[in-house]
Length: 573
Picture 1 (cartoon, rainbow, N blue to C red):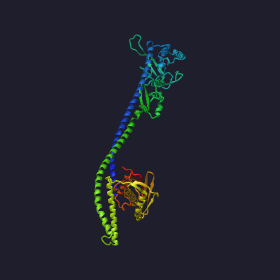
Picture 2: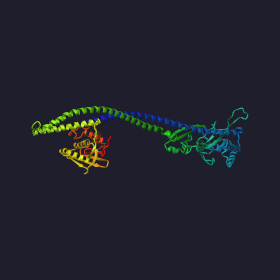
Picture 3: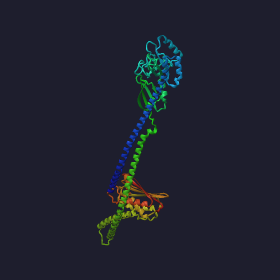
Picture 4: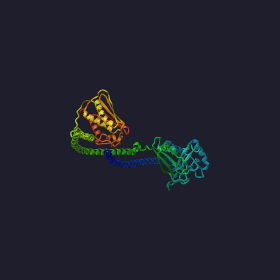
């Protein structure tokens, strides 16, 4: 019992020595993995932010460049007016054709000149323009004496144009109006858009002063449908990895003047969002962006997770390697130490056994002589005491012989002498001899074997010792009134000897200790029986020398079954 408990304590201590450094390595590696994952995540976020910034910058640059193109178109239109301060409908129509406005300026719906027209001529000119369908080339937007103005906001009555911060009287440079809702019959087209207006300038006829804004607030203007302008400019498709919505900052209209077709779909997929302001030509637009999670590609997105998984895997592998190295090192040290201890123990056992065997043998002889009457008549009481002394000495000699046998096995000093023997007869003889001991303990041994001889090649003395130890062990750890069943089963290649008891049983975790030297597993009967803890070790070694094996199955408080498998033909080493 002491050896078993000591061994368990040693195993717990060794396990602790293995787990502490392994756990320290694992925790350290996991902390490093966490930092690595955090850095990878930060790098990914930085790269993603940079990509988003590139997109927003590119979008703003595209819109700016496109509006600059529109401004240049207005500047060239102003050139027609600068020389004579008057442009005929035919000249304006020809100009509109020359610049190929519909093809070269996407979204452009109309371009015209707003100028003061005397009241008595305005109606006639307007009727002529409508009849010719040339509103897109020139338009008279009002008549004198009041300064003509064009509409912004949510109407299209062609009387007022309101920009972000200026009225038409205050415009001194190219300006974009607030959102305009174009609708028939005021315009030949419908939809949400804006107008770009630019004041008309002319030089004094004598050339004495620089070009100035015309005194009557005339201006050129161009009308645009915002959806066509921004779609042609940005060319966003359903597969584009970002979406855009553009709002008029000051118009008070909550609906966007432009929304890409993929905006809501990206938004539903929990896309990232950002907003930018674009101030251009007196107008301010709010631009909302949504970005797909696929912007950086699968490899970039999986980088943080990859770092985390790789780090955890590396942590486990490195910790496992450390654990294996520690176990290997511990086993190596323990093996070397065990060899040293075993050598010293074997030497001591051999010496002690020889020294003990000589006096024990002498005691046996002298007691036997007294019992035989060589020293005179022995009374009944004396004979009883002498028999007890003789039996005690026999047990002592048996233990000494076992110890000597163990020493010989460890020193490779046992040489088997196999011969043909009837294993059936050997078991019958053995069970008959042990049945006397079993009967004294109110136990019973039963043998179940074939009626015919079962021949095998084996060393009879060694095999008998191995089987006797196993059967005797079954009797020793079984209570009174129980049975021990010994069965023999044979086939062409081997024999199976099954020893089944109804004893105290063994815990599953203790089965591995059964065949270790000097190992005694504590139970309710272990204190009542004498033993050295080497009987089953001897049996295991002797069976192994016959190229056989022993299997053990046990249920606590139900019993234990030993199965010994032996080849029929002895295989020499």
